[in-house]
Amino acid sequence: QVQLVESGGGLVQAGDSLRLSCAASGRTFGSYAMGWFRQPPGKEREFVAAINWSGVTTYYADSVKGRFTISRDNAKRTVYLQMNSLKPEDTAVYYCGARRGGTYSASRNEYEYWGQGTQVTVSS
Image (cartoon, rainbow, N blue to C red; front, top):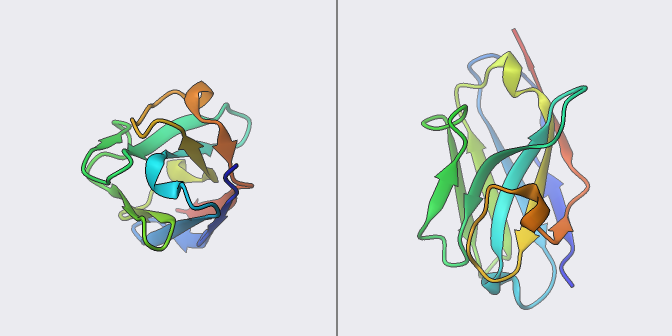
């Protein structure tokens, strides 16, 4: 069992930066791949970024590539999402997910555990 708690969301202006954190419970955090997804208002949850168990391999949605960076610290059981050059279309509730097996995935259906989400609002 893994419990996830996101933090770091807020209201910012276009062009600003934010760093989201996702703290995990459980001693097996290092064996999970982690992903960030987001759900814009009135839309379905969509993939943002993912990282494998070791942190060596990462994968991004085209819409955030070059602006967002996912990373993890297994000793702290935390995964991060550094978001730079934010745009109004990045406004969403951001969720982190944990996937057994250590290999990242862009499919939300392959993540077993989810946090409660953190709101990110970007004004123009």
